[in-house]
Length: 522
Image 1 (cartoon, rainbow, N blue to C red):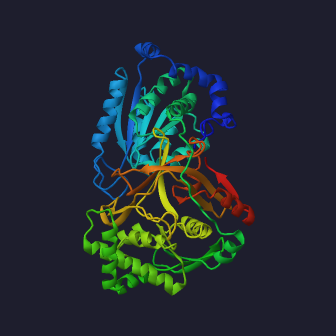
Image 2 (cartoon, rainbow, N blue to C red):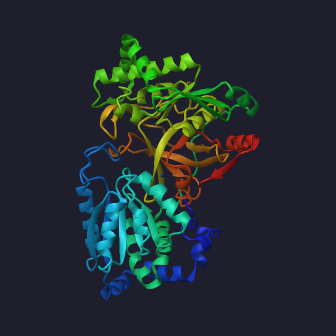
């Protein structure tokens, strides 16, 4: 995690609505669709004389994950692979499925070279770790390729790579992002239709099955939420008083302001020194308060929690020293590189609850988005996430290990939270915020180099406790075209920033005032 109906799969159909496409779609699409919509007896007849050989490629570091990455260190992919292959072999007893593993383009090239004389009819590529580049050379074969996300595992690469390939024009690529293996079976049936209509129709055929299987939108009625935004005049006056501290590495420099927000890079050493100097008695009191207020604390020792509280005090200290109201830290690089000795997650949690800004991964764009719109909403915290898409539930899931539990601002109602380890490596301390459902949310990102604000809205419908990937997982139903939500990840990257409330009027007014453009991704 609203898509393009057919925009991202057929450039000639980009201006068609979903209804018009299904009613008037190109003849080749309809020819293929006749198979997809036919009774089961027709499928049985089609397969009676049809033999397909499909190569399954699982994109992962290793079958048992050796490093800290989504879904998590030590994750065993073998039962997942076994379940997938059992499902496919049962659904397609006359197909031949050849199974492979690949973690990079070099390994993929060897597989493809071996397949050159193997009469492969198509490929099914499962993105099981996020950023391994395998789909690119497979898609370049020109054969039908079904690209599937293993949710909460390969989602970042899946979203970015699929959007990029579709934008470049790869009609033989079909993609699915679903928690229901029945959707996989439906998509695999498209290989039969593509064998008759041609590989260049495969993406369209898969898109048709994906759209047909996606649930219809539910009620858009949202719970009452009296959001009051700042006037643009006051926002412009106050934004010039804001400042972000960025800890990327050991270098120090001042960057160009964005939206009037000052940005200063500082070395890890200064943050680490502040952590060492933090009052440990005060840190212990903060840690105890966090633990007492949490619904659950699991696998996090009191000492680790106190280290996290000391990091919060360090964050506050450097912000005060440099006159900043926001901080963003390259947490993974700093922690794994030994530059810092506690994750900043709980510190960010505390800062965001106070209408200050703690932003993950030294992501300047997201930090600026948080500062700008926390100010505009008079204190509501932004929530950085790595979204995941699930068409089976018609949901976008905003996942990260940092989140506020004061989504309506410091004076608003608190929601429950849990303290758990950082998900990817099972170390340190992070937070799972169980955010309120039923409310309208607005998700944003800025691109200062293009003077654009990315925008979509969704209704919060729940929280997913799934252990894979980041701890907080806010589930929401997109408002608008879910298909279109698959189209922008290559241009904007994976991160999004979500706020509770209807910010649409304020976002458009701000964009008009500063001369920027709003890009509605749903």
